[in-house]
Every structure is written in C-alpha cells, then in structure tokens.
Image (cartoon, rainbow, N blue to C red):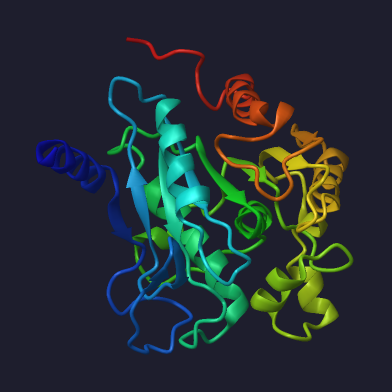
Length: 303
C-alpha cells in the first residue's frame, strides 16, 4: 500500500510542476506586500505567487495543442480541483497539454488595480506557454483558454482584450497575448443586466462606473480577431443566468466567428467533468469533436 502511495505521489508531483509566471520582484500591479497563499477545503482564497500547474501530455499521445484552465470561484476563490485539475487530466487524455492557472484574486490587498490582475496573469500565461511552445511540443498557434463560471469570464476577457496589460520589460513583452481558441462552461460574461452579482462585486467593487461595466463585459468587445469558441451551459442554471452564454454567442455570430453553443436542459451551475445529469454528460464528447472539427487537434496522432 505504501509503495502504491509513493508511486501515485511521485506521478502527481511530476504532473503538477508549478511554474511561476513572473521573475521575483517583477509581478505587475503589485504593492510588494509579503503574503502567503491561503488554501482551505480545496479552494484557494489568496494567490501570493501567480503561476500555473503544468500537466504535460505524454510524448506518445501529444497532439500539439495546449489549454490554460481558469478555475471558477466568483473571483473570490479558485475551485482548482473540480474546475482545474480534473479538467487538466481530461485534456491530457485527449493528448492536450494543460495548465491550471493560479491567478490573483481581486480582493488581494496587494493589488494596485484590483480588476486588472486576473487578466494580467492570464495574458502572461499565454505568453509564457507560447514562448516555450517548441520546447514543450506545443504549436504556438494551438494555445487555447478554458474557464468555468467566473473563470469563463476571465477566459472571455483574454479572448477579447484589445491591449497587452502585462509588459514587464522582459523578452515575453514581444510575444502575443491572444489565445487561439476558447472553451467556456457556464461562463459569467455580462457585468450589467445579467451579471452574476458576486463576481461583479469582487472584480469591480461595490459601485462600478458604467465605463467599468462596459470595459469588463466581453460580449461588447468581440470583433473579427476574436478566437473561435465552444460554450456549454445549462438551461436551469440559477446561479449564472444562461443569457450570459447567449450574449457572448450572439456577439460571436454577428462577427462571423465560427463557434458553437450547447445549452442542455439540466446541469444547473454544476457542469463538471463527470456525473452530469441527462444529455449534459455529452458536453465533453461534443467539445472533443469540436476541437477536431476546428483542426485544433488531429483525429489521431501520427505514430
């Protein structure tokens, strides 16, 4: 039994290599306060060192794509297991390298501009992976971003951002910050009429201005350069109004961004990797087929 435990522990330690996003002392938008990560019940409540846990696909199964996973948690915490590690292992099964993002949360007292930090970390992660893509067996034009709930909002922001917020004076400044595709599950999108109030409050504060609401409602910033997108949602989601997904898909459609939207009858705000009710269980199969159809991954690996 002890040998089995050591074997599993060794595998997880290797699979979950932690990669800090910034050199020491170079974290942007920081006051430089000394803090520690805060983790309770498989939820991260404070991120002192923004980074990502790397789950590399095996060389035999590698299909040359990568996905950055933005865990959900209402911008108050990161549900890094259910909307992070579990999904990373699924992507690995498909031959896709996955990176679970430990992004800073807006309530961190160290931040100068609370609303910018999550997007800065997402953009830096994209740059970091693209800069190392060749060494990791990843194609630089096959780097996507996935997010569930508030993590979906961060993924939308990364896919629609008009400017680079994370130039720190190192070689990554010249690397593209744009993802090549997006995968959204029950995403928060709108910061106005259909906003998830907790996510909006945590990201933008108690009384955000109309300008801030507009800036952080990514459906308003979709354009011809926005990457393709897969969206899965549930009709009976009472936590995050499914209109969020509909608004984003409508914007994609109007800008002729080839994307798809699946709204299942059941699932609530708990669509996960497995144990979903009814037809909602098909979302992972549909997502895989979409990635093949969009030439993100090949149907099979050439041996």
